[in-house]
Image (cartoon, rainbow, N blue to C red; front, side, top):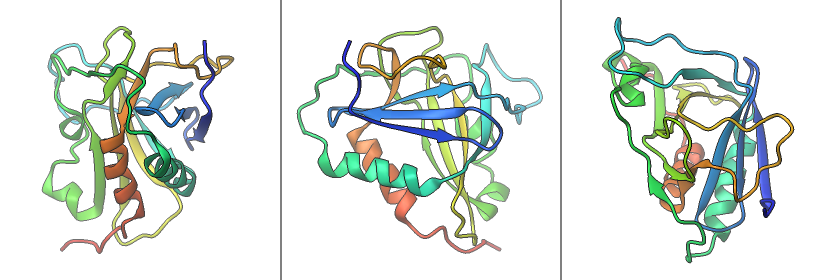
Length: 189
């Protein structure tokens, strides 16, 4: 059981944490720990047996931006971890569940969705999705997020290579880094 070299614990304002870790290998592993704010579905009647949807705001986007950029700049090209594509069954993709695909939402927010994410190991309902959003016209230090299907990391657990995890591949980490570095843009009229 190898402990991961680089770990970032990102507190969220509503309670709980998102945990990111990597060892400069094939991807950034992602877990949730103690998230408390479950979001209501935008649809009147969600289809199928959807994983709970969590949402809130990340306090310090700069730490996440630097962490992802460090991984992109220094990761090796040789994947050390076998990744499996996540599958979304019996539910709508995250951008539709949160209404981020509506014209009204695009006027006020920019977003970057990883849907579905790759997985390392198996857990019940492994269909992880993560969406990071920023408010247009506002260069703040925080960012919004929605997450579903991420595995839970117990409070006393240390991130290791043997724990099942959602994974942001190098290609997706590169796209996320570009999104986090880009200006947030004007409010659309």
